[in-house]
Length: 339
Image (cartoon, rainbow, N blue to C red; front, top):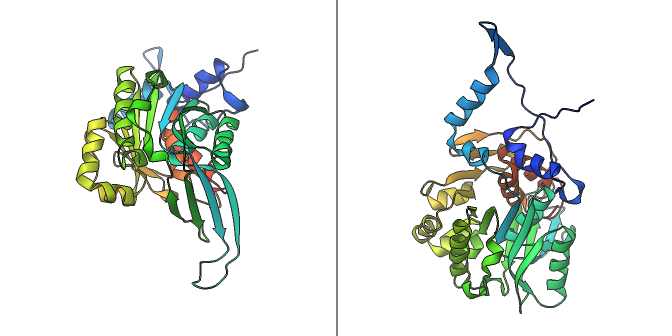
């Protein structure tokens, strides 16, 4: 007896890895397939309305084609791997007073978070960047290795730390010390690292030199090997520090296939750049992909929004919008940025 599985287009990358026994850590993220329209019989033969429906959906939304022919096996991320301190407050801070809180310490940094979620969702991931020497750096490296993330790059002085203050209701505010992360330069890039299917660049990597030049070199190497490229705007303050015009020019130079931003970053950037698929993350209200709205159908109690955007990006890269929204929902239901 054969067991039949229905797999959507967005699930093909995950399904292929499972069938090839490449699924790490025994996890496979499935979502229920959408109902298919019933087949009808015309002139003695069966035709499926589903096929017409799927073709019309693809034609109506060009961004869906980004995933239609995409099988992601290895995702390379560029950015920071930092010590992540998450402080979940029982009530809003009061100046000069003491407020009860729950504090967790672990690994973080946008590129590291995306890599960890990529593995969690069924693909391989390679983090590229600078890790700190000393106990903090070893903790971060061990956390990534435990989650199955490959690590490439250098070990430098000055461990970075990001402190996330999570208010009641789950909204977080971050204070970041990137340490020596931004010192990663183009001369440190090994071309073999870019033998990947997708390169994801954190916006923090574009904030200043020499890491900005490293991002440009890695993008050129990845593109030469046929990889797709995505960029996360990271924070409106990062865009503002670089300048809206210069940041848009960097996105155009990278020729990103996909750009992720939240609503504040979208407003600061002034909307889409070039031909990139433009994804705006809207928290509990889902996301828009090239202006088309997608609701999140997963109802969860929001505990901590730290890392939700990184989980979303990983989900999109691995399996499209449904997996992106599901991963973000999973992330906000628990403390910390990593799975």
